[in-house]
Every structure is written in C-alpha cells, then in structure tokens.
Length: 503
Image 1: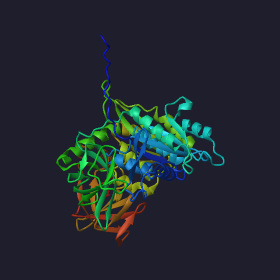
Image 2: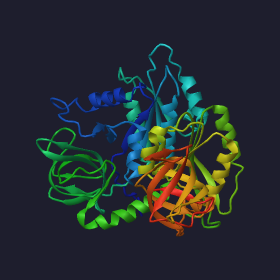
Image 3: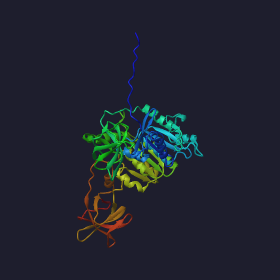
Image 4: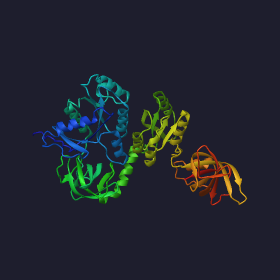
C-alpha cells in the first residue's frame, strides 16, 4: 500500500511593516530613497507620483512595506496613541562615525516596543569606515549582532551606491518569516493613521496602514474622534484601488476632520471598542500585568544624568531599592538633558522620568500634556527616595500646574475684622484676583499632590483681594518675596503654617 504523504497547509502571511531609525546624517533617508529607486521605479513609468508616508517594494521572496517617516519620535508617537508602529526596525549606523546619542535612543525605543532590530551598517565605502568598531559599540549598548554571539542580523551596505540593498531586503523577509505575521484579512478592521493633512483642493487626506481586516471604498470608518466615508483610495503609485489589506498602505479621502497620526482606525460601528483595545495595549506596554505567582508590578522609569559616572552610580543604586510587590524596570538610561523623545517614550511606556542635573524646561509643556511626571534632582539620595515613593505609590504629582504657593508666617488681624496673612512665597506668583486654596499645613498640601484617588479636603477656597508689600498695595508678588495676603470672602482663621495655593 503506498504511503500517504501529509502536506502541511501553508500559512498565509502579510507583508512585514518596517520603519527605519538611527542617528541624524547616518543615511536613513538615503537608504529609503535607494530602496525605492532600486525596487519600485524599475517597472513603473514615471515613478511614484505622490508621497503618502509609506510604500511597498516587490522582491523575489515577497513584498515589504516601509513607513516613509523615519525617526524614533514618530515611531513612539504612534505607540503613545495605541497604534501599531512597525513589525521590524532597521537601525542605520554609519560605519565611519559609530553609535551616537540618537542611535542609542532609537535602540531604546525599539526595545521598549519589543520590535526586533536589523542593523544596517551604512557608508562601508567611506574613508575611515570601521565595521568591527560599530559592532563592538552596539554590543556595549545591548545589541549583539550574530557575529558577536547574538541574534541580531546585521548587513553592511552603502545606501548611496546601492551596495547590498537586496541583501538587506532578504534579511527583512527572513526575519518576517520567523515572526510568522498572519494574514488577518477576514478579521475586524484595525489600522493606524500614519500621515494626515488638509489638501486645499481635495480636502482631508489620511494614509492608513491596515493591521487586520479589509478597507474598501464606501466603508464608514472612525479614527481619533473623526469619522469618514471612504470616497476614494490611492496607493503609493498614485493609482486608484478598490481595497486595502493587512500590511498595505493607502491614502484615503473622506474624513471630515484631520485625524491624529497614530490614531487607531476601525469601522464606525466598532468605535466603542477602540478604548478597550487602547487600554489593553497600554497596560501591556506599561508592564502593568500582574505575574501569576507574586502579583508583582513594574515601575517603568527613564533616567537621565549629566555625566556617565553619575548615571552608572544611579543605576547601581536603583537596583538596590526594594518594595513589596513592585520592582523597577529601566526603559531608557542616558546622558544629557531630558528631551521630547524621552517624554514621548515615557508617554508610550507609562514611565516616570527621573533626571540628575539634566532637566530641560523646554519639554515640560509636552510632559504636562502627556501626563508624564518629570523630576529633576541635584542630590542623589533625594532621587532614590522619590523612586522608593513611586514604587509605593507615594510620588508627588508635577508642580507645573501650581501657579503659586506661599506659607503663612504671621497673622495680622485688622480692626475691620479682616485678617491679613503674612506670607513667604515659595513657588510661582501670587496675584490679585487669583483663585486660591488654603491648606492646613505642608502635610495636607503634599497629600493633595499625590497620585491617589483619595479625596483631600482643604480648609478654605476664595480669591486674593489684596496683596501688600509693607503698607503699599501691589498687584502681584513672586517667589522668594514676603507679602501680606487678604482673601475674599474673608478668612478669619489663618494660622501659622497654613499653605496658600494659587489655582
């Protein structure tokens, strides 16, 4: 009897989605241009007619989708809103330069997203190129290429001359095969807005990258608070297409308002599910899932310092901190001021930023918008104390929303029955007409600043009626000065040690 041969069904997969990251001037844009020119325009008369933020290349082994917006900030911006950024990160490092600050940032952003990395060592034909030096520096930053006993693929290329571009594409498809990216064409529609703009002639245009399901002309969809009926769909070649499937980018016309980049795209009937999808993704990203045995939770932190030695000392000290049912996970560590990239990563990973002599005031508005706590210190033990408090849920909120704060030092009753509080201003500005909250003491004020759902009661609320400097009425007084404050309605029960907070 002849043997029956069992044929294993071939799993249908989708094209891998790739983003390119790395240090400025290391050749990210040149690489994308080289890939596009070599693999897209060969058979396309006139080339690509428009930029939609993503494109696909055809290879003998299959398609690859590239997000044409390189940079770890854009990558993390998508993740911070719950969107799927990419399956694979190509990290470009110049062979004649080496691992630089933005290279390290890109590595940390990719690792935080648990996205596998392929290293493209670029400019191998440039004077001073040293491939071994690059691989050694990568290993010092926890990226072990295969030659160093790790599992990270590396390809030596020249983006400018097109050297080994095909080999890089082959490596991407080999890794994609290992990832087994499933074709989810028949599932619920789920996509990500990767580019959006207002065209004066056409209206709102948005490029959508589908993760699952199928998007068709006429579909009613929703993304980031904006709804649309898909009136037309265009691929990266400028051609009208009837539908878009997983891994395939398409520019659509039909949104009423401009959806935010990174917004999740669903059918309009499923927009209620987006919040639960987002919350599940954020919980997974932030590492808040409980372990079965210990129910231990993670505190994700980013640490920045003014010097490498300080950073190393901080890291060693942090590993010595213990708390019941909680532990520290360092998402990123680095030398230099806190920057926008750090804040975006903190937002995407649910991290708190602790810096030592490295605070950058220019990012505090963004941190406030993203509800990211940024704390700067110049005494190490104070930083470590606050990390301990964060582990125990006792870390104080940002102070940036406190416009002014003063402590009552002396009481001045007036014949009229009014009471003037003699104060020292310890934060911000006190100004006539401003709404204020009066707290019993420092302890009650600080309790109000904690990340807690507990309701904290103040002892009074009112507005500043007058501010006196000596016997002179003034409109406002700032940090470091002494003044007298009269509140309306009159508060006769001032005591030394009360805190007056301007809202």
